[in-house]
Length: 139
Ligand code: THU
Image (tube, rainbow, N blue to C red; front, side):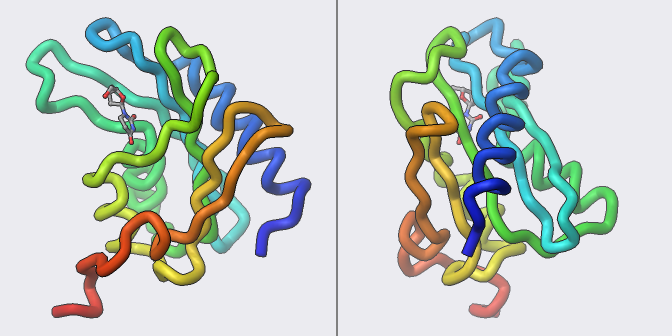
């Protein structure tokens, strides 16, 4: 389980990422902070594109930064987001990001923190948000 101090750190870090979110098309800003088993925190924001399809979500930005540096074991991710960067409700990961989590994370252990502030958050396991997920263990 995550202690409160690291949970708060992940939430604050994810909120800081909203400043880097590149969203000229939707203006829906998302920030993520991914905690690796080794204690590193990988940061991510969403990065949009004029051709739309190449858009990368904040969660995948964080995962791909970590994996590209040789880190493939993870404990938790915090995701925050909202229109114009205003955090009024939870911003749950899209299906594609859940699938990327499934590739690298134990669905019963990996924790997804959805937050609107350091005081208001909810924690789910990957299994809870991706029941019957298809992963490496199925091949
Ligand atoms: N977005 C994320 O960054 N993460 C998600 O899991 C959901 C969607 C981004 C993609 C796009 O830039 C904007 O939010 C609106 O879909």
